[in-house]
Length: 452
Image (cartoon, rainbow, N blue to C red; front, side, top):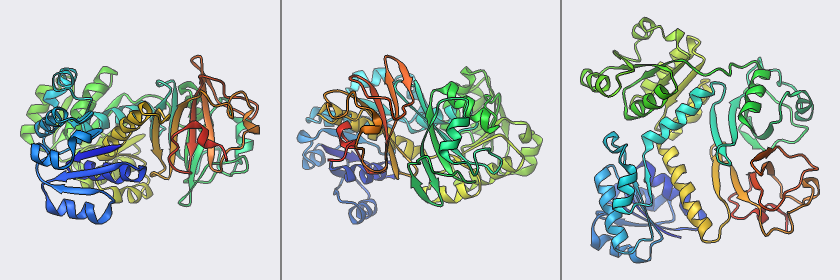
């Protein structure tokens, strides 16, 4: 596809970086020469300096032949104008990033009136991701498939977990529920585990299954699977507002610690059911006075990565069961994980991944069969969802008899709204939803899981 990205900031650059590796024709438009020089030196894309809302600049980028225009500048209104003009000039599809909470109840109207095909809100998307984590405290990260019937959960193996030292083939005989182990990172190496794999402390593991089976698995590990009730949020950002709205609907008690006086007043007006505390979330005395050790979850959402790290480390030291922090700088994430903080939110990556899924959905309408795709293990593995059809080499054949490529795993099947965690004697049938985990790179069609 031909794709124009307006805005070369964190999200725009991340999108250009990932889409350029998937055989798309990418043009990046930005006013900042330094931003464009960096993109030009590091990516195989075309760069144009100028205003993305300018008719002349868009025509220079051949907007009339463009399949998708993505506007992700820092200005909501500029993004909307870019998309409106782009659509009038012939762009087939448009995506706008709109972040202001004032527009949160108007997305449906904006999409209709401005003919936007997709509206993205990084803060709302990040809040939604955090809300999932809070509801499942034992999980580092959660992704859903098959209309939310299936959950894929990431967790880190602790020294006290009963799976340490066990081979996978022996573990599956002991488990009280059917879950499938999809991927493991051990000593910085990512593998699709086989029966002989032995679990070690600090392994990062992905398992897939129905929610009740995932809960039984974590109970087997001896982990807390109860939802959080008392949540402390540090930093009154946009994400904090969206998250409080979501958690309030779930009946949780929310406390927000924010240093800025005017922001506290605004939060009190917008969030009447939350307790707003004026204070420095990195100050130990403030956190102690607010009984941080009694919180079921703490979520650090200030605009400074370093502040989020400090408050999260102290909460972790105080024994808070669930500690979540926002990190903007991607190169910080491995360091933070080494400190024992696994639940990390990066709004730019969340937004980029959501747009990537939309791009792949457009590809699907143009003949590419992948319906949903997630990158896991820091982009070293992917999880793709397909519908099985017109695949005689795959259908009604026992999985153990399929000649699958190396490092490919059929993780789950969904048939007539029933989840099947497959074994060697199961078969793929016509119309099944098929969840595939792979290390081999992007798979555009289900038939590509087979050796030639």
